[in-house]
Image 1 (cartoon, one colour):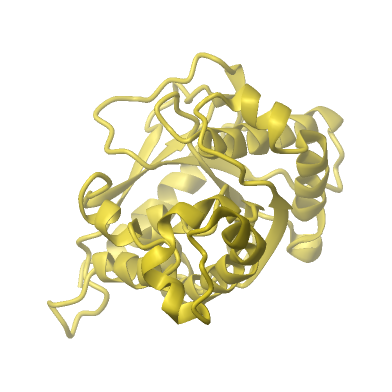
Image 2 (cartoon, helix red, strand yellow):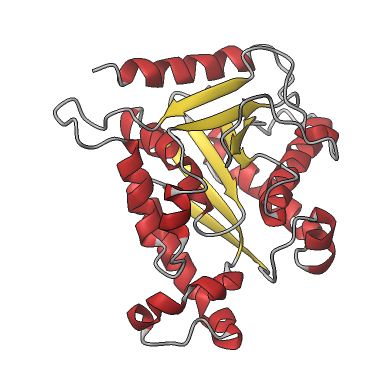
Length: 286
């Protein structure tokens, strides 16, 4: 890895970063990593959740579809920038793909909403140049799942396909990052996504790594742990008023789960990831 760890995160919507906020905050604030983020969609589909926050945004009727779709891309970019400041994210790349509707079928997403070819081209360019000549050591993506929002799975599959293409080019000038998939769900076994071979989790062990949200932020306070960071980031997304409740209920968890993909071919990559999580564990043993 580089002398300064460089991480690129790929998410579908502004607010998806909250699902792995603990790990991102620790990367930037505990070990000084450079973390950049790609947000694929413009977030306009979030108008359904915006009514309680309308008074905060000039009393715009954001819950009306036509008005929400007009103004939410701008508003949600600012919300993500606010969350990014908490997490220590250095740069955010907005790809501005359409957020038309919820659909678990990724084929529908690619056919009706996103320009897949354009996203892959832009993501490849971000990987090549986003961190200058140093490149990225790790790419963190949303783990593909048949139970997830189609946008979440689609963003992960596009990232994996981009990595696969870069590997096939075998260009010595391109640093191909190690890919980890972040699960939005609590998992009790290795997840599978049979629809795409690129989403296969490695048979090497360990192939799962956990970040503990109950770790304390500081040795001087027993009151604040990484759950605090999660809530801080959620609170930045005021136009998405159900996010905090959802995070405290259906997505409530004390750990963040990260999975190592078979796509990471070189054998030395796995020990590097093991050492990273071991380092984070040791740092938090105050």
